[in-house]
Every structure is written in structure tokens, then in C-alpha cells.
Length: 139
Image (cartoon, rainbow, N blue to C red):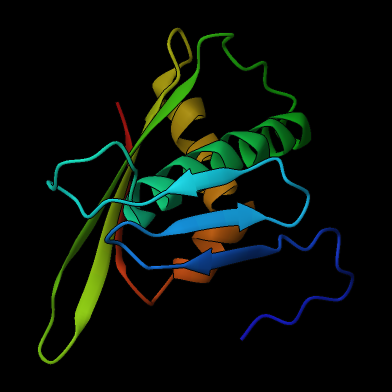
């Protein structure tokens, strides 16, 4: 288990209602999210979409740090397409994920080293490592 030495930020939310018609609000009022189950009618999102968005945004931020350490210039149009699956396991539910990194114009070998270094820095990658099936692909 990774122990945090210094807390940099704590996200706080209050959620009620769950996937079916629930709502989550952040303590600072910047986030209000309505929930709808995947595939159900309605205009809400679901936890898997939020996880995919959060992980991909965090991965890009970690990539900027990794690129700085490697003295590598990032393409302006870099992007991460995240896919998060929810499904059944033996007696419960589980997640699987794929992060598809697009680094146009970057030499493939350099891009691969960068993605691998980023995976070691990103807190979402560290939290999921060994816990869910994750593939990080260079596209």
C-alpha cells in the first residue's frame, strides 16, 4: 500500500441516490453531477465515465511532468482516450480499463518510454496497478 507523505489536495463530495437518479456535489460547489445508469434513458453520467475522465486528465498532467524529466517536447495535440469497463466477476462487480495515448509526430520509441514513465507517476495508475486489468496503448 502506498502511504501519502504530504497531502496536496483532498476532493470532497456528497452523493445521494446512487446510479439511478442520484446526484453528487463537490464541497466547493464547482461540481454537480447527475447520475444515470449506463444505457438507461436520462441525461446523467455514470461513475465509469467520471473515472475515465479523471484518469485521462491526471495521466496527461503526469505526462507533462515525465516529459519535463526526460527533456521531451510534447505535441500540442496529445490526447488520451480512456475506456473503463464495468462487469461481473465471480461474486461481485469489477472494472477493467484501457488508456489509448495519442502523441502525434513523436518518435514511437520515445513516446513508448514516455508513456511507461507516466504510468509510474500517475496516481490513478498507481492506485489501479495490480487491482484491475489495465492496458496502456500507444496509438
